[in-house]
Image (cartoon, rainbow over all chains, first blue to last red):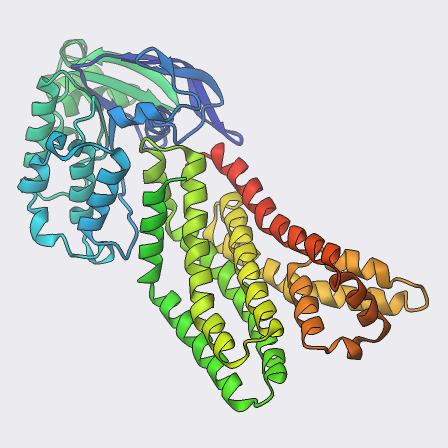
Amino acid sequence: MIKIEKLSKHFGKLQALKNIDLSLMPGQCISLIGPNGSGKTTLIKSILGMVVPSSGSIYFEDKNINREWAYRSDIGYMPQKGEYPENMSIGQVLDMMIDIRKTPSHLLDNELYEKFELESMLDKRMRTLSGGTRQKVSACLAFMFNPKVLILDEPTAGLDPVATEILKEKIIQEKEKNKLILITSHVLSDLDDLVSQIIYMQDGQLRFHKSLAELKADTGTDKLSRAIAHVMGYKNLTKEVIHEQ
Amino acid sequence: MNNKIIKYVISDLLRNRTILFYTLVLLALSLSIFFMEDNTDKGIASMLNLVLFVVPLVCIVFSTIYLYNSTEFIALLVSQPLKRQSIWLSIFIGLASAMTLTFLVGVGIPTFIFAYSSSGITLVIGGLLLSLIFVSIAMWTAVRIRDKSKGIGLAIILWLYFAVIFDAMLLFLLFQFADYPIEKMMIAVSMLNPIDISRILILLEIDLSAMMGYTGAIFRNFFGTHTGMLITGFVMLLWTALPLWFATRYFKKKDL
């Protein structure tokens, strides 16, 4: 569904992405993991066309996305930090996005909107909102248009436990509808029961792309967070220490 | 261009407190000038300072700040199924309409009420074009410079250049070459600064050109003719379009 070939990106001297090759299929729920500054957000933004790659190409349903824009109607994106015009109310932001997407109202997915109880806050101005409420608005917008692909950048950061649970349930539900879901998150325990594949990045390079079961078997652990700690700290920790944990 | 983005940018701006405050200040200043001056031409001359200094300053600084504050919002729009070019142009149209509307309410209406003459109309048209031009320059500054404080700094420097430094250099040149016939060249040089163009046009309308001596007569000869006006209008449009064009070209390839 999304195919990435030899993707590289540099910002000045900094090489953010080095020769990434990836192939992502519908029905997968992929967790993009890596230390800070490893190029996760750059990769996501390249897929969304927000960052223009230095070389390499990205194909969305076999079409090169270079200079394309219409393909984005099949993607729901929840940014790390959702910023909206300060003076607009939640209702206006939602209306604007519905206007832009031109999706007829009977095709809209209002589940998160109802579960997050945004209706009672429709008149609130964006500048008065807390970080968590902004996240709720972003999540709501990402899922609203029934996209084939969901890209969630740190979706649970700032959400309270109840909202996190609602969002997780929604993600699982969408995964079962054979959608492609790409998540970056630092809170690994949140992802344990969602994720089917792991992409691990470091210094702009793709270290591995494995299914969760494979990774757990390879590292001999049963928790995602431990498996990742194993990979990240491989050089520093001896095997015994990891097994003791 | 996307009508919805334009609509939302305008409705966002019209509720912005700075814009409301700016409108009220313009309105208060122009009303007090016209109430104090009985002679409308003198009134227009006093309005010159408002239109030539305050309007460009507010337009460029406010637009730059607005664009920096909308960075994340623009990023959000870019992640939607929209063409980058239409996003950027829609934001320009939104900003430009809000600024020109503000100017029309703050300066246009009082001028039309108290000084409905050719000089008054020139003043309003000049101010409108200056608003457009400085919004367009702001679009260029904001797209080229990533850092907010540097960008606002550059905006202020650009304003200083057009409003003060350019004239200082021009004056210096004038004195240096006072013995040579440079009057015709002055017309060409003045085209390099939209504020100067507006100033000359308005001063000529209120018949202060007599005070500008021989240069004034040359200006009158040029700006008084149809061809002269056409060229001037074209140059002002170029001043609006070029920064916007460069900004759009850069925005299409920018990493957000």
